[in-house]
Length: 177
Image 1: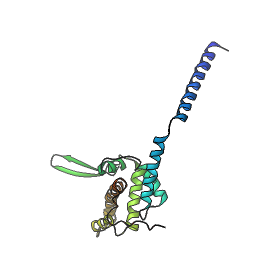
Image 2: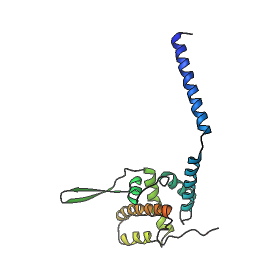
Image 3: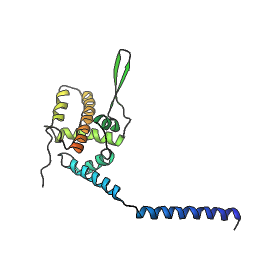
Image 4: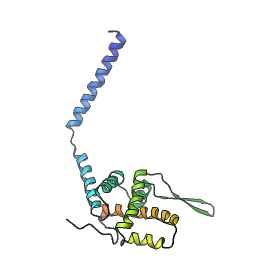
């Protein structure tokens, strides 16, 4: 065997032995941290499932995309989703440029989809009533703008529900089977 090829085989063998040692160490390490994180996500998913209008797939998606993180306040939640407002101020000019869209796109899409579903399945909630008051005589464009605001409020309310246990105002929980 040529000396260059032999040296390469020896280096590859050393890398393989290092990977085997690392895998053995990982197999022996306690998995308590992983199980506690998994248990927390399962608990959050189960809490979301208690709300009327949220099914298992939707609750799992929200938990995996958004509520696996710990946020300090509602602004961080909206910012992570990409639902935070992006104002533009220059001198005396104040102009709203819409949402930033800088966050997680899957979480943002699910939040907006959830807002539409919330209106259908939770018509008596305070958030649904707020939306209806704001868009009473509004056009489709106004409703599309307001649904993003509702999504931002709803995601913040769900985050508050998951962290403090405070159910969104006038929201209906599923009947226990």
